[in-house]
Length: 310
Image (cartoon, rainbow, N blue to C red; front, side):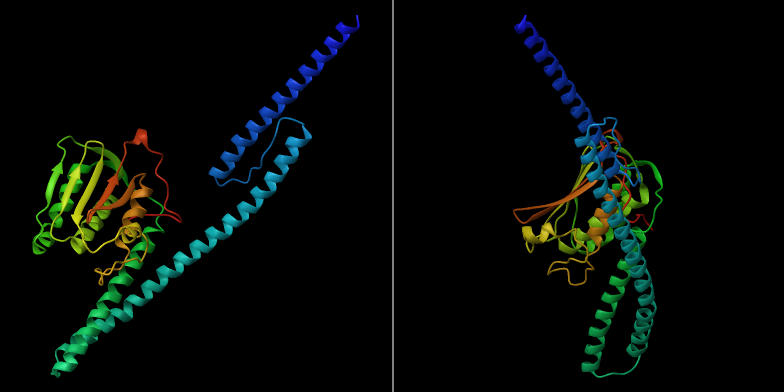
């Protein structure tokens, strides 16, 4: 009789432990699912559990404390980021007026009789003033891109947009002695994108090729929606290429560059759900732009603080 009682007691204990394990497993799954949801969205909801297990509820309570702190830090960051963007926009806008006036006075000085030395100094001043003006314009445009919240989504044929961009830059490429080698698929590549944003991205990539190419350019478009720009750039290094998409970064050969062209391209590409990357092998720089079809990419995300195009 005693062995049967012991077996029954052991069975009850096993069932109780299994029930406890199942309850804890369910609690952990609830915590994981809710935590992922709370971190992914901007919500004030906290973690809630269906179980009354004190250990699981204590864990949820501590996680809720961290969620509140994270939410406060996120609000401070967003407010500071928004204020910084507004300050940069206002500052760049305010700088445009005096710089325009400075360039106007330089034009007036050019009409006066000056010595060769003075003319040389005026050329240097004009060069620096024009560089400052270009930088101010790019900062202003970048600020506008990072502040816009709406996008004009439409069906875009990448073949057509790429061809239009190449034609728009044909004169500049010819002046540099560059004859692009094209390998464009004849299969129409349709994507749902912002047409103006795509054109801006392609224009910035072609401008980059104009600055750093040693005289060649190869452009390819695959049916999968991958666009590549390749050119010989002997003055670069892998470290430089790794920083090409950083804001305000320019390499030694780009003295007149603002360092915002590729940063803007990355900003817009990622906001539309695409990817962009740089690769450097054998003195050849390759910029790869990918726009996967809608079913293969996540929903287009907003640029931090907003995003847009002119």
